[in-house]
Length: 151
Image (tube, rainbow, N blue to C red; front, side, top):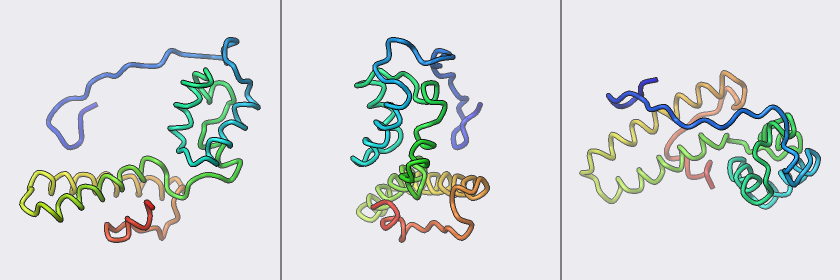
């Protein structure tokens, strides 16, 4: 697939090995995995951080294969799901850091373009999340209100 904002073609990435069932050598069973996900979420970790911690420290290669649910679905069941999806939150943080840079360096034309591209990604993601009902229909993004969303 081609890149959206560049003239280059995409690169194929590495793929995880296919797993059909939870491996026997894994330290936790599915119930323990769900409780560990809830504990880590209470400590303030995001869903991707939870997945990496489970992979690296608790030898759980795939939460979805082990439990049949994703980390986000487990957090939703425990009513700990974040208001804004994680990928949208990270893009908003990126836009804020670019804007902060542009306030100091007003002639930086490359980063003006980077801010435009980042905000277009944010708008596309918002449109997708509204369509899939993960964000309310009246939810709006503005760079001035973004600091309040991320903090």
